[in-house]
Amino acid sequence: MKFFKYFLLRTGLFIFAFSVCTVASMPFGLPVRIYGLAELQDDPAYEEYRQARDLIYDDKFKMAVKRLNRILEKYPQSKFLPASHFWVAYCLEKMGGEDENAFKNYKIVADKFSQSEWADDARANMVKLAKQLYSRGKREYKIYLETSGNDPDEDVKLAALAALGQLESDEALPVLQDVLQSSKSSVQLKEKALFALGQIGGAEALKIMIDAAKNAPQDEVKEKAVFWIGQEGSEQSLDLLLDLFKSSHSAEIREKCLFAISQIGGKRAGDMLEQIARAEKDIEIQKKAVFWLGQNDSDSSLERLLRVYESIKNDEVREKVIFSISQNDSERALDVLMRFAGDESQPEIQKKAIFWIGQHSSERSLKSLEAIFNTTKNQEVRKKVIFAVSQIGGEAALAVLYEIARSEAHTELQKEAVFWIGQEGSEQSLDMLVAIFKTSGNSDVREKVLFSVSQIGGTRALDILEKIAFDNKDLEMQKKAVFWVGQEGSEYSVQKLVKIYNLVETYDVRKRILFSLSQSESEKAVDFLIDIARNSSQLTLRKNAIYWLGQSDSRKAKAALLEIVNE
Image (cartoon, rainbow, N blue to C red; front, side, top):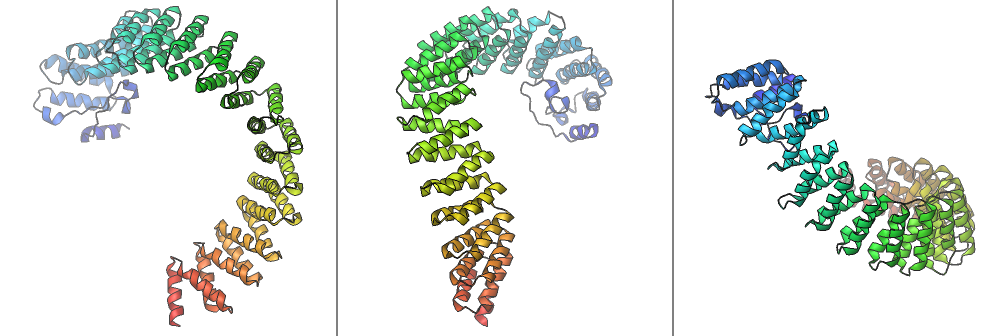
């Protein structure tokens, strides 16, 4: 590492990259700086500064301090003075036990050389050191942190405000209030001040945040103030948040108020959210209130949601209620969802309830869905049940889907069940699909089985499709099986297609195989097409192979065609 740092130093590969970071966070622990040493070679301190710099990069901090102090004593007019003071401070930090002396040297740079390129770095490091020294009982450094809140450099301000918040002292409140009330403070700076207030907490900090939430000219600052008021968690906070909610015309601020109320929690917060959900005219705000009610996983929250549902007529808001109920993991919540799922007077609500029952993934959920499927006559609802069962997953859910696919009278529902069996993707799924294919007399269902087998993929799925392709008496099923073998796109699938071609004699199946091989990028597929084009005893199949070779980008295919033409 030392060699690498030294190499960078010698070759001058430095990039200016300072942005309120502490020395510890910078590359190699050093501020990166364009030195421009070549143009300062006439400075009498040049050689000693260069030597000191090399010592720093070799981590010889004590020796570097001696060299730098010699510059400060011998060359009072040198252009290296700001840098020398900075590096003295840096080395003292690294040596340990010298933080106050380091602070003094950084302060010389910040005060005496305030226009130098080192001043911003020095002030940022002073903030870091002041925080450390104050936390060790050196209370005089608190003054620097407070005055740094008004530093002309915003990066230094941000660092100072962060430090003030972490010290959690009421003494910082006037500085933070000034930042929030100043028209010169940026949004970023005000947000940092609010963060610091949130860390400090207490009645006085709350008053300042309340003022910002009411009077800040920027909505972003108001939103942050609302957030931190919610984190304070007091009864006074609830009253204020409700007042802000009622008086604000900004949807974003009103939503932040709802969130903040939900974070405080308790009976009063629940009452407020329920009242807003029931009486608010803005549908989006109603839905937000319902959402935050649902995040409280309790029986009282569930009862509130039910009261909201009964008191409103808007379907969007009612659907949000169903969602919020679904987020409650209690048995009581599942009872409520099952009640909605069995109510056919509101089909859309019924379907939403069915969906969310499927997300519960319990044995009780599965049994309730099976009961709904067996009792309802609404085919759309039954389709939703199949999907919900598939989301529960596992052997019991697969068994329900298998029974529907095997014995259901409605073809579309059978196909739907077959599809979701395939999506399970297990060996058991393949067993079930094979059994359905063998027993079903419905060609549409059997085609869906082939598709589902192909979606599972793998060696066993290809073996199943191969067997159907050459062993089935239904020509259309054979062709479909060949098609899905071809869609696998692997070398193994090419082997299967060639094997099927050699086992079957049916022209239509062989023709479909040639097409499937033409879709493959495998060299073996091209070789087989060339062989058929040259040697097949069936002229029509030879022509078909030649056609597909002509569609290929393979050089081997083009060369074979030229040979065939010239034969």
